[in-house]
Amino acid sequence: MLYYIDPFLSNVALAILIGVPFFPLCKKKKLLLQIGAVARIRHQLAYASHRFFDENGFLYVHTPIITTSDCEGAGEMFQVTTLFSQAEKTEKELRENPKPSDSEIEAAKVLVKEKGDVVAQLKAAKASKQEISTAVDELNRAKEIVSKLEERFKLKPGIPRKDDGSIAFENDFFKRQAFLTVSGQLQVETYACALSSVYTFGPTFRAENSHTSRHLAEFWMVEPEIAFANLQDDMNCAEKYVQYLCKWLLDHCQEDMEFMVKNYDKSAIERLELVSSTPFVRISYTKAVELLKNVTDKKFDNKVEWGIDLASEHERYLTEDIFKKPVIVYNYPKGIKAFYMRLNDDDKTVAAMDVLVPKVGELIGGSQREERLDVLKQRILDAGLPLEPYEWYLDLRRFGSVKHSGFGLGFERMILFATGMENIRDVIPFPRYPGRADL
Image (cartoon, rainbow, N blue to C red; front, side, top):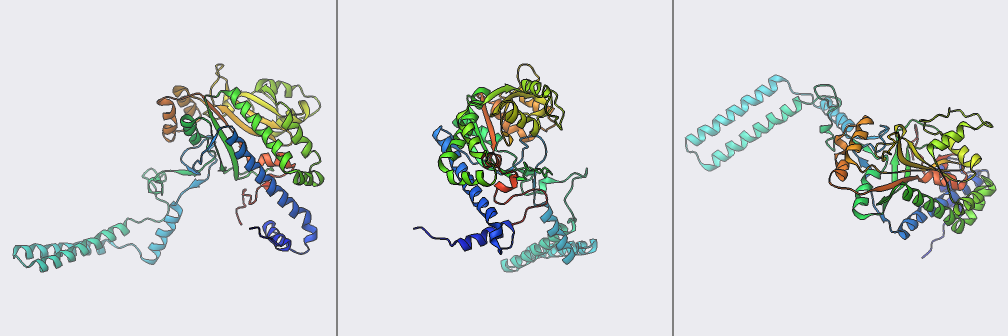
């Protein structure tokens, strides 16, 4: 059965969503239509993602949102803890019922001794079972009072700490530090090693104090992982996936894409047609730096030299000005990439790749994973990370592994690329960024 939603009610809901007065809505009509168009395009891209991976033999795996490991090694993670609420509860208890004094505890202990003596005397006198049982119950209640008093005496306001001043996470809910995930990749690798082609699609979080038009604190990632695959296979899959998404929008979102062309980006459909039908350019990071260094018609805000992490302006120049099509840059310096990326034979670069597209720059980041145990352990240490949280990940290599690769596509960036919208906050229903987590 289909239900009809009155346009008036629909507009009221959208007006509430974007935080504008309902009247006069005629002034907000374009914005309301844009929200609807982006929502439908987002839906189609999500559906197309599942279709693509299902058609290519991938298994959908749900990876945890709460994790104990930092996939990227950047440390910009949201911590998950109950210690603050525990501290508030303790402080409230202490306000309402102050800690007992030493004398109160000593008096309770004296009472326990007295009750114990009574039990001993009754047993010696061979009193009835009922008398002894009653006395034992009174003794146990006295002991329980002492235990509670001693427990309350140990209560301290604030976050629990160890003797060295560090936070005692063993008192936390998970008995150790836990965080909101920055990526499901490490976990999905375990399934790739067992089931071959798998992928995860879910929310990820970065506690990065960034207010740019390309960053969110909460965003969605599509992360496939392929067993028995090298970097070349990884690039092939990424290219095929992006082209599939573009073709899908052209075939299933014509009306909404025409709205975006008319109101926001005249080249949106043309860009989708180009990407869906054109092979991507593939160049090494070293070659990309060489090309950017030789640019004379533009002055970059960020200096170009080997070893830098390419900025958005560099990435867009490669795709929009030099090649005028998507570009895959591969073999990045190891110093700017994550520890899990496979170290190349030159000992300077890793088997990593980024898919760069017009309008956005980096759309996908991926790599062949480091399958050599000794190399991986050293890379973790070189990144300044402790080995202990990654022992389970190291076990995938310690007890045998396979060559495997994968990548992550920033879902909101894909929507930016498709629609031509300027700000990433406009392509997610409820944007989270520094200072904003309401609604």
